[in-house]
Image 1 (cartoon, rainbow, N blue to C red):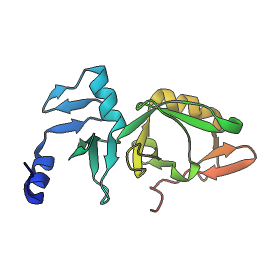
Image 2 (cartoon, rainbow, N blue to C red):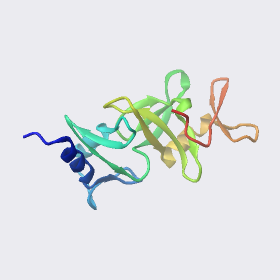
Image 3 (cartoon, rainbow, N blue to C red):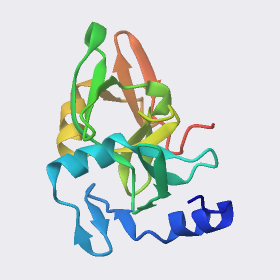
Image 4 (cartoon, rainbow, N blue to C red):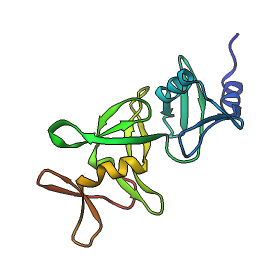
Amino acid sequence: MTLDPETLERLRRQLPLRLDRQGQFLFEDDPVSHPGVRALFLRGLDTTPAGEPALRVGEQWVYLEVEDCLLRALRVVSGEHGAPALRLDDGRELALDPAALWEEPGKGLRCAVPSQVSGRPLSVRFTNTALADLAPWLVDDDGRGTALRLGAALVPIPDRAPAG
Protein backbone atom coordinates (compact mmCIF):
# COMPACT_ATOMS: atom_id res chain seq x y z
CA MET A 1 0.00 0.00 0.00
CA THR A 2 1.36 3.39 -0.99
CA LEU A 3 0.27 6.51 0.87
CA ASP A 4 -0.29 9.74 -0.97
CA PRO A 5 2.38 12.39 -0.17
CA GLU A 6 -0.03 14.60 1.80
CA THR A 7 -1.06 11.76 4.13
CA LEU A 8 2.53 10.65 4.58
CA GLU A 9 3.59 14.22 5.46
CA ARG A 10 0.78 14.49 8.02
CA LEU A 11 1.75 11.15 9.62
CA ARG A 12 5.42 12.17 9.77
CA ARG A 13 4.48 15.35 11.63
CA GLN A 14 2.04 13.67 14.03
CA LEU A 15 4.39 11.09 15.53
CA PRO A 16 4.88 12.20 19.17
CA LEU A 17 8.65 11.72 19.26
CA ARG A 18 10.91 14.35 20.77
CA LEU A 19 14.46 14.87 21.96
CA ASP A 20 14.83 16.77 25.22
CA ARG A 21 17.66 19.14 26.21
CA GLN A 22 19.60 16.32 27.91
CA GLY A 23 19.53 14.13 24.80
CA GLN A 24 16.77 11.77 25.98
CA PHE A 25 14.33 10.54 23.35
CA LEU A 26 10.70 10.54 24.46
CA PHE A 27 7.69 8.94 22.80
CA GLU A 28 4.79 11.02 24.10
CA ASP A 29 6.09 11.42 27.69
CA ASP A 30 7.73 7.99 27.97
CA PRO A 31 11.53 7.75 27.73
CA VAL A 32 12.97 5.57 25.00
CA SER A 33 15.29 3.61 27.26
CA HIS A 34 16.43 0.56 25.28
CA PRO A 35 20.15 1.14 24.53
CA GLY A 36 19.92 -0.39 21.06
CA VAL A 37 16.95 1.77 20.06
CA ARG A 38 18.63 4.87 21.50
CA ALA A 39 21.83 4.14 19.53
CA LEU A 40 19.77 3.56 16.36
CA PHE A 41 17.97 6.87 16.86
CA LEU A 42 21.21 8.77 17.49
CA ARG A 43 22.74 7.38 14.28
CA GLY A 44 19.56 8.33 12.38
CA LEU A 45 19.48 12.00 13.39
CA ASP A 46 19.31 14.29 10.40
CA THR A 47 17.69 17.43 9.08
CA THR A 48 15.46 17.81 6.07
CA PRO A 49 16.68 19.85 3.09
CA ALA A 50 14.63 22.71 4.59
CA GLY A 51 16.55 22.37 7.90
CA GLU A 52 13.86 20.73 10.06
CA PRO A 53 15.04 18.07 12.57
CA ALA A 54 14.29 14.54 11.43
CA LEU A 55 14.95 10.95 12.44
CA ARG A 56 15.66 8.29 9.83
CA VAL A 57 15.38 4.55 10.46
CA GLY A 58 16.07 2.54 7.34
CA GLU A 59 14.11 3.98 4.44
CA GLN A 60 11.55 5.68 6.70
CA TRP A 61 11.81 9.01 8.47
CA VAL A 62 9.77 11.32 10.69
CA TYR A 63 10.01 14.88 11.91
CA LEU A 64 11.47 15.21 15.38
CA GLU A 65 10.64 17.82 18.01
CA VAL A 66 13.92 19.00 19.55
CA GLU A 67 14.20 21.10 22.72
CA ASP A 68 17.80 22.19 22.14
CA CYS A 69 20.52 20.66 19.97
CA LEU A 70 20.38 17.34 18.15
CA LEU A 71 23.63 16.03 19.63
CA ARG A 72 25.82 16.57 22.66
CA ALA A 73 29.61 16.71 22.86
CA LEU A 74 30.32 14.46 25.84
CA ARG A 75 34.10 14.94 25.86
CA VAL A 76 36.78 16.90 24.02
CA VAL A 77 40.06 15.08 23.43
CA SER A 78 43.33 15.85 21.71
CA GLY A 79 42.94 14.81 18.09
CA GLU A 80 45.14 15.01 15.04
CA HIS A 81 48.09 17.40 15.51
CA GLY A 82 46.84 18.21 19.02
CA ALA A 83 43.68 19.93 17.77
CA PRO A 84 40.46 19.38 19.74
CA ALA A 85 38.22 16.48 18.73
CA LEU A 86 34.67 15.89 19.92
CA ARG A 87 33.34 12.66 21.38
CA LEU A 88 29.66 12.79 20.56
CA ASP A 89 26.72 11.01 22.13
CA ASP A 90 26.09 9.26 18.78
CA GLY A 91 29.38 7.39 19.29
CA ARG A 92 31.55 9.31 16.83
CA GLU A 93 34.80 11.13 17.43
CA LEU A 94 35.19 14.06 15.04
CA ALA A 95 37.63 16.95 14.75
CA LEU A 96 36.15 20.21 16.00
CA ASP A 97 35.62 22.54 13.05
CA PRO A 98 36.50 26.01 14.43
CA ALA A 99 34.35 27.67 11.76
CA ALA A 100 31.28 25.84 13.14
CA LEU A 101 31.88 26.84 16.79
CA TRP A 102 29.92 29.66 18.44
CA GLU A 103 28.71 30.87 21.83
CA GLU A 104 24.93 30.95 22.10
CA PRO A 105 24.19 33.82 24.52
CA GLY A 106 22.84 32.48 27.81
CA LYS A 107 23.11 28.85 26.69
CA GLY A 108 26.79 28.11 26.10
CA LEU A 109 29.01 26.72 23.39
CA ARG A 110 27.67 24.86 20.43
CA CYS A 111 28.85 23.80 17.01
CA ALA A 112 27.75 21.73 14.05
CA VAL A 113 28.86 18.35 12.73
CA PRO A 114 27.73 16.43 9.63
CA SER A 115 24.82 14.03 9.90
CA GLN A 116 25.68 10.36 9.45
CA VAL A 117 22.66 10.07 7.15
CA SER A 118 22.87 13.02 4.73
CA GLY A 119 25.98 14.97 5.73
CA ARG A 120 23.81 18.03 6.47
CA PRO A 121 24.85 19.95 9.62
CA LEU A 122 23.54 18.84 13.00
CA SER A 123 23.60 21.10 16.05
CA VAL A 124 25.83 20.04 18.95
CA ARG A 125 25.68 21.33 22.54
CA PHE A 126 28.78 21.03 24.75
CA THR A 127 28.20 19.30 28.09
CA ASN A 128 29.88 20.69 31.19
CA THR A 129 32.47 17.89 31.01
CA ALA A 130 33.22 18.71 27.36
CA LEU A 131 33.59 22.41 28.24
CA ALA A 132 36.07 21.54 30.98
CA ASP A 133 37.96 19.35 28.48
CA LEU A 134 38.02 22.22 25.95
CA ALA A 135 39.42 24.73 28.48
CA PRO A 136 43.11 24.19 27.53
CA TRP A 137 42.32 25.41 23.99
CA LEU A 138 40.35 28.49 25.14
CA VAL A 139 41.98 31.87 25.74
CA ASP A 140 40.84 35.44 26.30
CA ASP A 141 40.95 37.34 23.00
CA ASP A 142 42.35 40.64 24.36
CA GLY A 143 39.04 41.60 25.96
CA ARG A 144 37.03 40.96 22.77
CA GLY A 145 35.74 37.60 24.01
CA THR A 146 36.99 34.05 23.92
CA ALA A 147 39.11 32.48 21.22
CA LEU A 148 40.16 28.96 20.34
CA ARG A 149 43.95 28.47 20.30
CA LEU A 150 45.04 26.10 17.52
CA GLY A 151 48.82 26.01 17.54
CA ALA A 152 49.95 29.61 17.00
CA ALA A 153 46.56 30.69 15.59
CA LEU A 154 43.75 32.29 17.59
CA VAL A 155 40.25 31.75 16.21
CA PRO A 156 37.68 34.10 17.79
CA ILE A 157 34.48 32.38 18.97
CA PRO A 158 31.52 34.43 17.69
CA ASP A 159 28.30 35.03 19.65
CA ARG A 160 26.05 34.10 16.72
CA ALA A 161 25.70 31.13 14.43
CA PRO A 162 28.03 31.02 11.44
CA ALA A 163 26.39 31.98 8.15
CA GLY A 164 25.24 29.14 5.98
